[in-house]
Amino acid sequence: MRLPPGQRAIDGFPRFGTHLHRPPPAVSTDPRIEISGAVTTPFDLPLAELATLPRRELTCDFHCVAGWSATDLHWEGVAFETLYREVVEPS
Image (cartoon, rainbow, N blue to C red; front, side):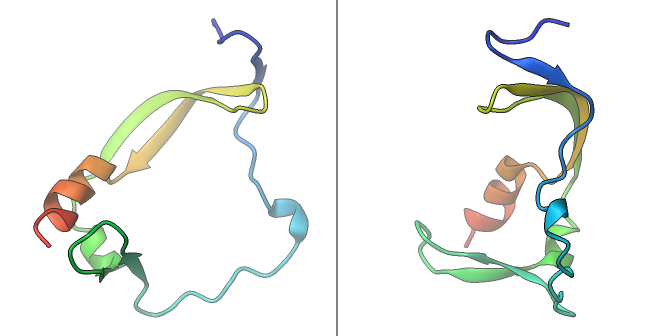
């Protein structure tokens, strides 16, 4: 495996915040993502609608600016381009 200069390999991917031992926040029965900023009209996107968009899977490396790299990680979800083209642009 070849890493970028100054990076060191680690096993797995760190779970940030697990050391805080706080209970997870309450999740709404109808969770939504707020879309605002450089859009014509701000709006909310229900997670149920996000779940209907095509998902993408890929395996790639994560190189942190702190100097560590986690390799061969499996990622999946809705690509930002898909979200933008199918939800944000038409709004």
